[in-house]
Image (cartoon, rainbow, N blue to C red; front, side, top):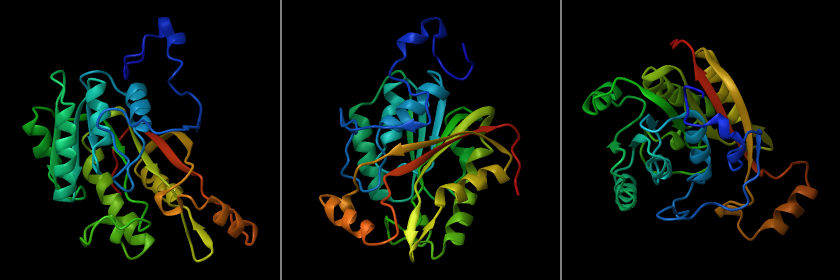
Amino acid sequence: MPKFNDLDLKNWKEYEDIFTDTLWIIEKRDNSGVHTSKYHGNFIPQIPNQLFRRYTKKGDWILDPFLGSGTSIIEAQRLGRNSIGIELQEDVLKEAYERILIEKSNDCRGKLYIGDSREINIFKILKSNSIEKVQFIIFHPPYWDIIKFSDKENDLSNSKTVEEFLSSFGKVIDNTTKYLEKNRYCSIVIGDKYENSQIIPLGFHCMNLFLERNFLLKAIIVKNFEETKGKRNQKSIWRYRALASDFFIFKHEYIMVFKKINWFKI
């Protein structure tokens, strides 16, 4: 059995619902229990569910530096994993807390903190939970400025340039991954941006931030999505625009998985 998950490989054929390919076609988001799609920009619950089952064990600690609506914490609780979520906006954190509390599990802990993940004291947070390291980190940052999540200057979605965005996200990586246990994993869920008639490959820019820090790239997963709130009920219009121009319509985002072998600050 792998040391980083609970899968019983003697019965490996029973895990038909766990993805092993790098193309994830998910037709419908999981809206069970307290999960909601009302929060603009949250990812579908199947993503953390798949990642946590592959790369963590019951009792492990998971860190989410971009809590949002709390999707990852809810999935961690359901799977018996302890979790820590950090959120920049107090009102968003409050809503997430109320939602998470409904499905609170006595078998694990879910802790939420308000703060800027670039500089919040992770050591102090871990110490307050009597731990020194976490076993998995899931990053779901803003896709630069595609969605403006707040008016706060320290919100990554308010970065004025892609360089500023990447610099800020790099600080989040540095502040969090030094507390990731060696030989364990982290992942980023990220999409690209189309601006000024060209693609800005945010996914690969973010990938390079991890590679520069000596992480091993274990997977580049492509996940489909059928529509966004901004393009809902506009499929025909966007198809016409694509045919009339030289671009293709975004219907994917990336899930990249990295392994920590030796933390290195650039």
